[in-house]
Amino acid sequence: MLAAKRTELYDACKTIFGSEISVSDDFLRYLQPFGLKTAYRKRALETHPDRARAVGDHGADMHQRFQRVRSAYEILLRYVENRGRRIAGEPVFNGRRRQRYTGRNTAQRGAHRVSDHYYQGRLPQRSLLLGQYLYYSGRISWRDLIGAIVWQSAQRPKVGQLALQAGIMSNQQVVTVLSRRTCNERFCDCAQRFGFISSRQRAVLIGRQRRMQRCIGEYFVENGLITSGDLSDLVAAQHTHNRRAVAW
Image 1 (cartoon, rainbow, N blue to C red):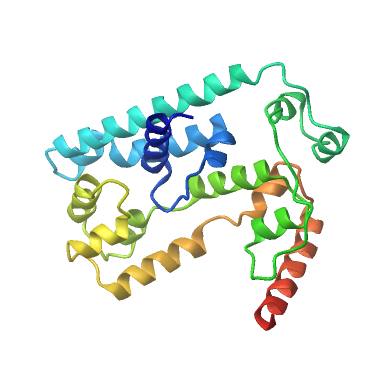
Image 2 (cartoon, rainbow, N blue to C red; image 1 turned 180 degrees about the vertical axis):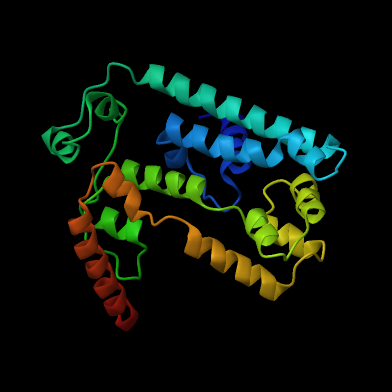
């Protein structure tokens, strides 16, 4: 991938998914239309000029931000569609891969006909998040992990909405942050820079956002990768691993 093209795609991902996402070539390789469209809809609602008018703002800055979001979505959608055409005709996964997707329909399995791999080494001797633990345990593939991260990001409640609900920020302050934050700047960082929130309020909002986001394990259950019963056992195994990792 050319450096200029890669930079364009990375910037587009940051615009759609937020600066907290760690973008890589693997992230782009496994980005799926559903996750992209879900994230775009939420970002478009945040930046649509009608939202600025509803809170009494002139909307010029919001309009520019909305245009950037739409442009980023079009860039990523073209990439995903062209990538799909490039991989058409590639062989399906081996028997092990097909078995892990038993229960998905044919169209869903077809969407996964891309080069993928399962981790086969030893578990890293460090604390692991649930998605990481499932991947390093060989229960999910690298592609499944990336898909889950994108899904969880799209489901995560927005800090601006939480700040409004808690009465920490006003509508006008939220609009100011959304329209004036720099490229890839996080909402909380910008709000604190403008003096709209304190460091303590920032920590409260981020903590509330993390508590309210859907558990990444739900993605694996909903997509037929793991049963709910197996997930409970795997979460317990993850906690055991992390306790041991502290002693290592």
